[in-house]
Structures are given as C-alpha cells and as structure tokens.
Image (cartoon, rainbow, N blue to C red; front, side):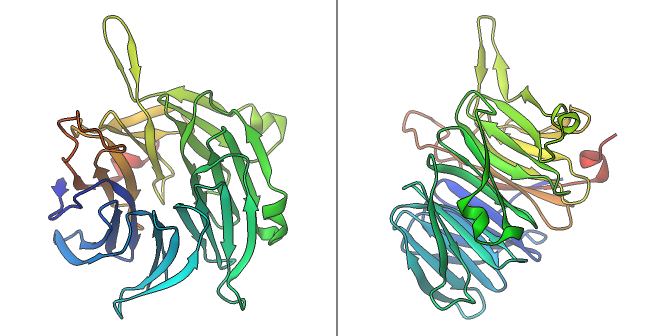
Amino acid sequence: MITELVSPPSDTISDASYKNNILIISSWDKSLQFYNTKENKLLKKIITNTPILSHTCINDKIIYGGLDEILYSYDFNKDIIVKLYRHKNVINNICYQKSSNFLCVSDWNKGLNIFDDRTKNGLICEISTFGLICSMDINETKLLACDSLKRTYIFDTQKGIDSFHNPYYKDNILRYQFRCIKAFPNQKGFVVSSIEGRVAWELFDNNPSVQSKNYSFRCHRIKTDESEVAYPINTIDFHPIYGAFCTGGSDGIMCVWDGYNRKRIWRTQNFKNEITKVKFNNEGDEICICVSSYLKNSNNPNDKMNSVIIRKVTDKDVKPS
C-alpha cells in the first residue's frame, strides 16, 4: 500500500529519519516536519533560519545544519532551538554514533568536525579531507565518507580520535563522481553510488579472497533506440533486518536489491520527479520515499512536484531468496 503524506515541503527534500514512530523530514524550504505516518498526520512543522541540508537525532533533540553554516539543536519536547557551533562553510552532512557519542559534521570547505558534548568545548577534532565530502554514514564501529574527488574514507571510531587523523581510504572505486555512501547493517562493508547510474559493493575485510567479492553494477538507466541515459543515484538505504538495500535515482524510480546474490528484487513506478531520499523505518515494515528536484531547474515541468511517499514493506519485498 502506498500513501502520499499531507503537506509536503515546498522545496527540495534534503533528509529523512525516523525517531521511534515519528518521521522527520528536512528541506531547503527551511522546515523541519514531523509526521505520524500511520495516521498520515503532520504533527509539527517548524520554520528555521536556514535551508536545511542534513539532520540527525540524539535522544529528544534534532541536530541540523545548512546554508547559514551554523549547527543547531532543536528540542522536540520543549520546542527550543539552540545554536551549537558556527562552521567555516555550508553544513552538508551530519551523523551521530551513540557508542562513542561522536557527532560528525562535514561542510563545503572540505572540513570534517567531530563533537562530543561530554567535553568542555564540544569540538574534539577538526580535519580537512582530500575533496568536499558528498555523503557520510555511520555504523557501530566506523564512520564512512566519500568526497568530490572520488575518494572513500573509513574511520575506525573504536580507535578514538586517532582514527580521524589516519583513516583508511580508497580512490576511484567508481569512474564518476560519488553521490551517496551507506554501510551494511552487518558491519561488513558498504555501498557507494555515482552520478553515472552505477553502484559499487565493497567489503571491509582486506583478505584477497574477500576483496575478490567486490563488484559494481549499472542501474537507473533508460535505453533509447540511439543511446542509454544514465541517471544519478541520489540515495541509498538498507533494510534493518534482511540487509536488502534500495536505491533512489533522478529517473524517479526506486529499486530494491539483493546485494549478496547480485540481483534486483523489485522496483517502483516512476514518481515523475527525482528521488532525493529513501529511508526504512526502524522495524523495516515501511519505507519513506522523498520525491523532489535534486537541483532546481526552471525548465523542468515537474520541478515543484514535491511529495513524501510511504510504502508498506513485506518480507517478500526485502528478503533475499
């Protein structure tokens, strides 16, 4: 069953997350929106000071940032916004690791800042990356990042702050610029996508027999009589239980993949605009599909067709065969 949520954002949808049973959507229209997806009800909408590019949840607080270069905390229960830190450039990715209490924030100045609110000043590490970080993800033991110069980073957070100064990195996994990186739920690897309609499957173990299982594949492409059009793959998420992963592209289609068996399980209809974010809920029984223009184009008739789609998920949809 597919449900289109009421009152979607009026501009590009930048991020989506689930906090318990509440869906949180951030947007370039400066809003944070909170939904009860079961009842298709907008619980709360706040208008902030800046177009928001990323957010994450820490307990009852939403940490967010965007074009005004300031990291903010919004307390959902108290309805209070607090400024946390001013960055040197636009904030574009935010991740939080509960086990270490690391809050990881990247910006458009090739900066990566690590915060821990248990310390006096909060900021505990500040580094510069090779290129501008395009995407980040975090699991129980590692922070993953990919940059504009096609370098992927693996920061082993179990080693503490030292890991941020000496990360493992790998160049040119894919030929074209990266768009999204996502960690396996089982901690064994990650996938990364590019603007050229391609996904790479990468395992952490450096044993040659394991590395031989790495591969890449083409998707989100449309063939015509004369050519093949490749679309950027903007977003990836893994099912929290079965480990299948979904990709959302600028072709307006979401696909679900069985990575270990190297096959597609199913795909959606075309949503008539780009997919900027996909996110499974914690139970894995629904997925949020955010439909909006990744880059604003006045010549695109679907440019303002923003929607937040909720699709019910069954075992058949995501369980590898």
